[in-house]
Length: 235
Image (cartoon, rainbow, N blue to C red; front, side, top):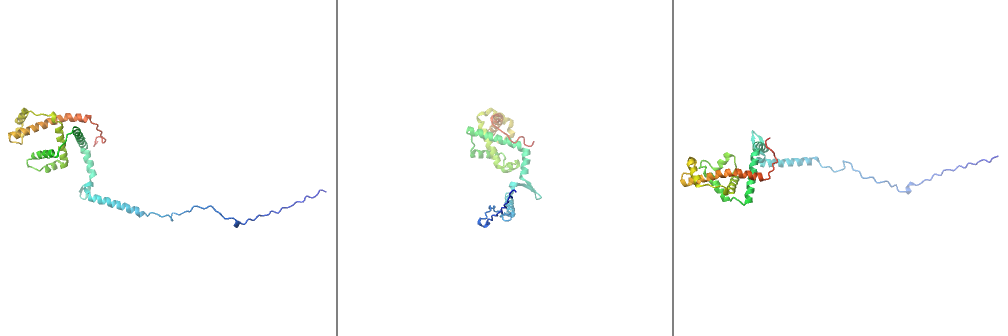
């Protein structure tokens, strides 16, 4: 008989490891903070800052009201920017061309070494003031024209520069003075013959300078590098 196979059963030994023998190391988790734990900037701080800024702006406007408000009508303000916009629309091109002309003339005078002293300026202003014959003050006359004293002096300074720049091209003869007095004696303010001749010569010289100026200035303007960035104002 075949021998019986003996089956051997192996008992599975369970190896029990004491977990206390090993440290229970766990990966450290990053420390988390809730939004409640983080410091927050109070919103009222931003609001307070806005209020302070507005208060400062309001104070500046009140203190320098004329810089921001041109006039008020029944308490309603007319902003200066609105006035400036209207003036620019109406007179912008004319004023711009005048400013360009003044820059060109001043630059040419500097180039040629032509200057105007304060004494020359004062003398010319006194001469103009004398033509008013005491009917009104110069300040009143300027106010009627809507011109400030500073603007007036600037215009006179430019006029003197023009007279000096073109002086060599303008001449007046004695016969021209005689003819002018004969034709315009009723319009002369002077009564003495000598003063009439001086007045007539000055008027003739002024007329000739104006004629020469048109050609001279057109040539000066043509040679200049002028760039306008505002286009036709008012279009």
